[in-house]
Image (cartoon, helix red, strand yellow):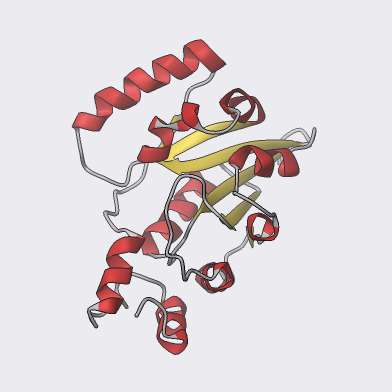
Length: 204
């Protein structure tokens, strides 16, 4: 905390399931942005992604709680799951904002490049500092990112800042596919999450 202002991180997503890449990104986010608190917020009904019709948000919440258990300063929140309708980021930012807080919003490259298509992008940029992390080694995207940040600077007076971290090319889709195929996932998700998936028979 600096000058009475708390630095609050927000890391949302489907987390279906949460994996080691998510955990590594959260740890880098906390360290580099010098966060006092980090909210990990599984989406209830994500507006940007299709999730399985059989998805139970309670499982995604439980897996996030297992993945981040014991990590100092991390709060796993069910606020978007409890909220009815689609989980819009601007509503979450409004719920967490206050005069004694500075909000930082973490997202992947794909989300960074489409941030101006989200609900009320002007308000999102007003309420927080967008931060993105590269989860791919595609050099072609670099030019797109630079161009997009120029647009954001012109339209909103802010850019999305990059989190410097090792790229972990890992997706939740890959993990679900591996479970369906009967392949191991222990190297891809925290041990407690792997046990939970097996015990609950998820993604079969």
